[in-house]
Amino acid sequence: MKAQFIELIDGSPLKVPENLEDLLAHVRACRVCDAHLPLGPRPVLQAGATARILIVGQAPGAKVHASGVPWDDRSGERLRDWMGLDAAAFYDSTLVAILPMGFCYPGRAPSGDLPPRRECADLWLNGLLAKLPRIELTLLIGQYAQAHFLRDAGHASVTSTTRDWRTHLPGVIPLPHPSPRNVAWFKANSWFNDELLPVLRLSVRKVISA
Image (cartoon, rainbow, N blue to C red; front, side):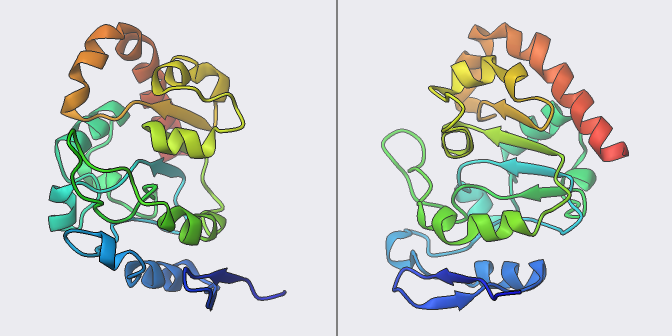
């Protein structure tokens, strides 16, 4: 089999490791965006070759950057409740892979955090996905994940894409970001709690118990 290479930002080639653990080590050692990250690089992600659920969000917040644990904040508490998973199952990399669109905290914007930097997806995402052959359910959380994965499926906005969740079943479920900043959205879109969350929990339960 012909060796695969990733072209780094400086144009130099990096041979893609044959196993996931070696690739994760390369990702966690990445310093490509060092000059642009206010708190420095600290890639935060989770993956195991047997994972059956993939969670794609945006980028770690400052609290997650500090702990190094994905979704280690109030948003993560709400996400785990949505999925019907306790922390032990959620952080079991043999079951759940967590690959945000940006692996490092990007810094603050006037409202919320800056968008995830594109270098992560450009450099690493396809290689990581190729080493997760058992994924059965992908959760696309927020605008950046949905725009990347559903750009050819008519994605226009988080609300419209999430409202159209039935179109993407059974393998993909789009979700809004579970941030406390989105409480007004949850209140304005009662169908999310009434219609989508029961399906999400059932889908997660089926995959985990398979």
